[in-house]
Length: 194
Ligand code: RTP
Ligand code: MG
Image 1 (cartoon, rainbow, N blue to C red):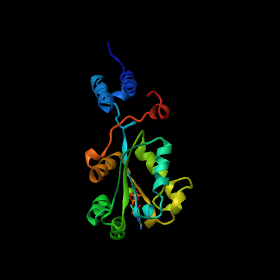
Image 2 (cartoon, helix red, strand yellow):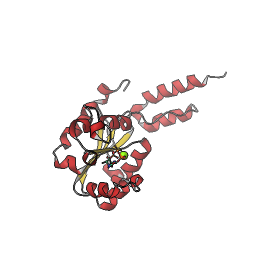
Image 3 (spheres, rainbow, N blue to C red):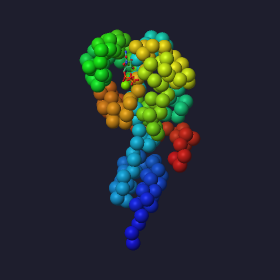
Image 4 (cartoon, helix red, strand yellow):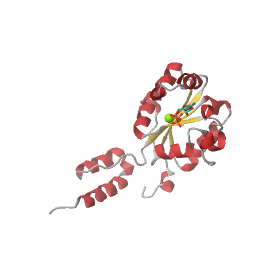
C-alpha cells in the first residue's frame, strides 16, 4: 500500500519531536527509518554570540546575557578571552576585502570579549533579530543594539548569521570539551511537547 509522502513527513516530524529527550541522534534515526529527513535544527540549534570589547568595558555583559536567558535560550558555552589579531581576522575572514577590516579586527583584538554558545529553537535567526541591525541607529528599540549602542564601529555584539556560519564560528572559538551538553529542566516550560 502506498503511503503518501506528506503522511511520512508528518509522522517523522511527530516522532522526531517526541524523541527529543533521546537527543538529536534519535530524531535523525527516526527520520532515516521512515525514509525522510527530520530537521535537527530545532531545539538543538546553536549560535555563536560574542560580546565585543566595548560591551565588556561598558559593563553590559550581564544585561545582554540576561536577554538570551529570559527569552528561554540555553547557555552551553561561555568564556572571556582577549583575541589575537589573527583570531579576529579569522573570525571576520569574509570581510577581509572591506575597507573597515583593519580597524574592525584591531578593535576586536584590543581587549577582552565574552564568547558564548547559545542553544535553542531558531536561535541563529532569533539571535540576529534580538541583536538588531549592524548600524545601531537603524536598529529598532527593544533590540540589543537599538537599546545599548549608537555607532556601527561600537555595536557591542556579534551574532552568527546562518546555521552553517554558527558551526564554523563555534569550532573556531571553542574546543568541543568546552561545550556543555545538558538538559535544562526549564525546557518543559519553554517548549511544547517536551
Ligand atoms: P557582526 O558580524 O559583528 O555580528 O555584525 P553584522 O553581521 O551585523 O555586520 P557585518 O557586515 O558582519 O560586519 C561585521 C562588523 O564590522 C563592522 N562594520 N563596520 N564601517 C562600516 O561600514 C562597517 N560595516 C560593518 C561592525 O562592527 C559590524 O558589526
Ligand atoms: Mg556578521
